Image (tube, rainbow, N blue to C red):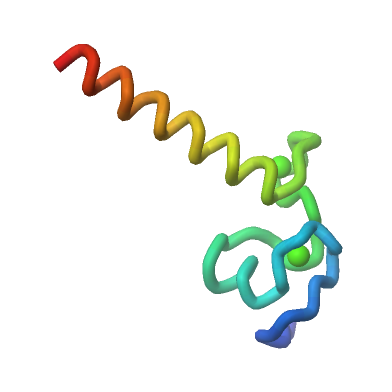
Length: 62
Ligand SMILES: [Ca+2]
Ligand SMILES: [Ca+2]
């Protein structure tokens, strides 16, 4: 599959095709790459928040 690196957003999930391929490693043709019902940007936010929470808990425990 050929993907134009630019600002086109084929799947209309809010991330450009280029960002999805090169930055987030998600599918530029699917707004929900892993099929869990949350769009890729929402998934990324969830992962980010989970990571932040783990870091905070680590600080508390230490
Ligand atoms: Ca997209
Ligand atoms: Ca998803």
